[in-house]
Every structure is written in structure tokens, then in C-alpha cells.
Image (cartoon, rainbow over all chains, first blue to last red; front, side, top):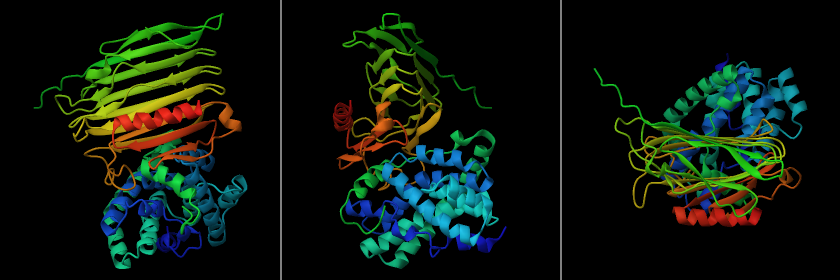
Amino acid sequence: MSRAALLVLADGRLPAGGHAHSGGAEAAVKAGRITGARSLEDFCRGRLHTTGAVSAALAGAAALGVDPVALDEAADARTPSAALRTAARKLGRQLLRAARVAWPSPELDALAARFPKGAHQPVVLGTAARAAGLDAEDAAHCTAYENVSGPATAVVRLLSLDPFEATAVLARLAPDMDTVARQAAEAARRAWDEGTDTLPAASAPLLEVGAEGHAGWDVRLFAS
Amino acid sequence: MSPASPAGVHARARIGARADRYGRTVLPVLEGEAPLALRRTRATGPAAQVTLVGAMSGPLGGDRLVVEADVGAGARLGVGSAAATIALPGQDGAAAHYDVRLTVASYAELRWLPEQLISVRGSELRVTTRADVEEGGCLVLREEQVLGRAGEDPGLLRSRLTVRVAGRPLLDQELTCGPGAPGGWDGPAVLGGHRAVGQLVLIHPRFAQEPPAATMLTDHAALTPLPGPGALITALSPNALHLRHTLDEALHRLT
């Protein structure tokens, strides 16, 4: 395993389109639910332990080599919001384009052929991690981090939040990210042994409802 | 030495609905164990109607309750409950378990519309609801979670809802809330201070061809098409009454 490969995969500068998505933060800012560093942290912690935990487990399972078609189906069922399914596939397609150049592999090619409109992003990320020689916990860590770094960066732009404050939020969330990644890797191994039904399914009702509202806005800064 | 923990109540209730040769729905299976009782009640349409009685004083910590409904091809069944289900603390701090297993055959219909689940301070309850619908089957399923009685803090509630259609997972979601739930459960991404949250799942073959468009129903309620022949309404409300009003309006709009 290459630790540097994990840094490359987790780097926000990886050209995979993530910067265009706020992870629900734009809707939460507009609704007045995120007003500063404190509520951003609460938002990120809730997101991390729900959709973050689910995405990390999906990515971990894909990194182990669990059937990506079954994982994509499991991701669909765990993403009831149609707007969020669309966003996840769009992000998956963009990540796959970058990953196929960075870590060429027959598995990434097969994923592209099977899902021309894009597979769910965590499934692509896990498969890319596998191609880069990373393991399930690496993929889960990367996904857990992305899950909160996206909204934190977005809120810097949306609220003109001090970037130092946003970074401090992420630093304070590090122990939670480690826990989520460790549990996700365990869930991934269980999915390998017992099937994808055992994957976690934690949901965040406000993110789901907010995503449908956000998708209908005429003018918005972020795609989701 | 720790004393043996007192075992909670283990009870099961079963409903089996079948279409007879005249197309009417009969109930060859209708059995409950205390504290779960089932009553066939007067129906207003062609569907058979059953009311679940007696879950109102529980479950208590340590209890394990199972409710099963199986609707055979061509049968139509409606199930409601006489009162809200109230998760209460047990004597030894053990969790209560409430499992609902629903199966709906082709050309069958199940309307599963129970009253609210209220999570009371100090309680711990795990609910799992699993619905398996065959291709061509119809399901209307409502779940409402209320966090605490009026002005009360909730207990720990973990509720998982899984719906499969023709063997494929269409919806799988779990809500964990209350003291002891993972961080951020009451924050701006998850519940944001709302004390009532509900889901209404609609499975119908017509949604495969004409999925309903995603729509906001209120500021905190949305309708979304599921990845298959179904739709989901998710609603958050300050209280149970407001939540029911939102879900009822959505149900009338879609059926």
C-alpha cells in the first residue's frame, strides 16, 4: 500500500468536480441552519455519521472487491432523494474519468462500460482506491474526509467564514472521522462475507428534504 | 454476581390475507399474543381492514414484539392501530425490539397505516420494518417517529426501514436519534430540532412508467421518486399533529 497514493486520492485538487458541490450546506445556509463555525461543525458531524458512514462503507466494500453493481444498487436504495442520486452519479462519472488516467485498471474500465451515466461516487472511489493499491480502511477514510471537507469549504464561500475556522472544524472532527472509517471498514468486510444488505443505511432527513428544494432553485452557487 | 435480567415479553402477531374465488379478501390467519391483539374491523371498501390493539402500553425495555402481515395475490388489506406505540424504559435498561415484516404478492395491495411511535425519555427501542413486494404489488406504508411526549426528551430510537420490490432493494434507511445516538443527530443536517419525523412509502406499478416528479410539499417535507416503481415522502415537523397533516395531504394527492 502507498500512503502517498491515499493523499493523491483525497486531495481536493484531484480534478473530479467535488468543488462544485456543497453536500447540502448551501441549502442549510439559506435556511439559516448554518450560521457560523459552530453550526457548521454540528452539520458536518451529523452528515459524517449518516451519509458519511454509508458512503465510507460503500467505498470500503468496493475497495475490497465487492460486486460494484450490487453496491451501486445498495447506494441507490440508501439515497432516497432523486436529486442526490443524480449528484452522486455525476460525481462518480467525473471521478472515474480522473481515476482511469491516474490508475489505469481493467476494473475501472469495466465500471465505466457498465455505468455510462456514472456509478455512485463512493463505489467509484472504492474501485479507484483498489486500483491504486489502497485498502478498505483507506477508501473509507478518504470518503469520510471528503464527506465533511466539501461542506466546510463550501461554507467558507457561502458565509465568508474564516478559512482558519473551517479548517479548525475539520481538525476537531478528525477523531469522529477515524471512528467512522474504522466502522465502515468493518461493515465493508461484513458485506463481503454476508452481502450488501448488511451495509449501514443511516439517513439524514434534513439533507434529503433540503436537496430536493435546492435542486429546484433558479440561482445557486453549488450543484448540490 | 449480577442477577439474571428479567426477560421482557416476547409476542408475535400474524395476519394472512388471501383473495377468495369471488375476489373478496378473507383472513385465514389473524392471531396475536398478549400484548398484541388483532381485530378485524369494518371496512369501507373492498379491502379487509385490521386494527392492531394493545401495543399502547409498550414496548417496554427487554420486550421483543413481531408483527407480520402477508397479503396473497389479488388480496387487499388495510392495517391500522388503535393507539400510538409508546417505547418505555424497562427495569434493567435493556433495549426493546419491534420487528415488522410485510409481504405483498402480485396484484395485491397493503395499506399499512399505524399510529405514531413515541420514544419516551429513558427508553431504548430498535424498530426494523421490512417490506417485500412482488412485481405488480401495491404498498402504502407510513411510519411516524415522535421524539418524546409533550415537552419531554426522547429515548434512544433506532428505526430501519427496508423496502424491496421484485427482490431488488428500493429503499433502505435508518434513523437513529436521542441520547446515545451518533453526534449531530439533532443538528442542522439530520433533525435540526424537529420533534416529529415521518416517511410515507408508496409502491405502485404505475410509478415504473410514470415516476412522480420530485416536489417540495412544505419547507421541511419533500416527495421524491425512488429508483423503481415507488415514491417516498419524507417530512419533519415540530409535532405529531402537524406531521400527520402533512403526510395525509401527500397521501390524498398521490392516491
